[in-house]
Image (cartoon, rainbow, N blue to C red; front, side):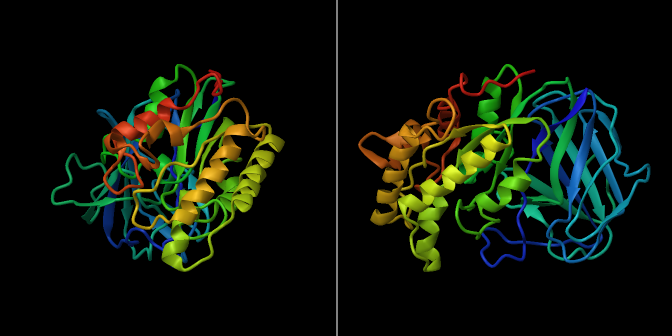
Length: 367
């Protein structure tokens, strides 16, 4: 058996200047979080992160629950830990089988002032927060609900040797913005339901860009952290470009050229191939209905998508999400039936259409 990524969630810096949700910290509070596992195994371990913390993070107690099974998470045999600023920690293995699609619930008791928390900011899932130490409590009375994940970066599962997985590396169209909260209807969830071997873990960040920092580090920077070290990875799916073409309007920045975006995608493909990974490139989704779209940005999108459809930089066929969700009468716009309502994000039906655009012949995962 071998440790393989069964769940991932990409985190951002709460101190970044550009924020699409409100960062927060904790003091003498318990945070309960639900992690929907993409894959399962004979045991699991939880990854905690203080990557962007400015001080050590004390976790005084931590528990897990899977269905009716519940227990303490330990770290080197101890039920508490201190994570230095900028570091991550992995719990001791929990000898409990878990299956793909399982909801793993993790409680963390944070006794001291944490400062702003390292977090995933738009995961289409809520964290529940209560005052005091209530790890493992059957109910969270009067809990505050926040759409975010805090101090979590992933779960590893003990799976059969040779199990291979894909990383969905991209923006909000992977992370799940626009889909029903707490319903597991992100595009990556729908894609996993199509697979009969292996699975896909989600490293999408809403607002993330290919070429420039802003909401999270740019894709070219975070590739080495969020893709290459993921245990079991053999494939990577890419969906970037929307934020490169809309955020400049908000930020007063110059619009990137089609050539610059092509160079960025090629760079990712080359680095993935050098690491022995297969790359499935996705066309840039439609955003013409968004108030911050511009004719110039849409023109660059069309140029880059034509390159993605014809290049040999990627493996296999095209993950043509742009055509899968487009309004036939206005191809730069999301089809009204698939639009979350803001002209730039997919609803549940749109997320399914995005997942269905992946040719499973290109996603040859092993189990």
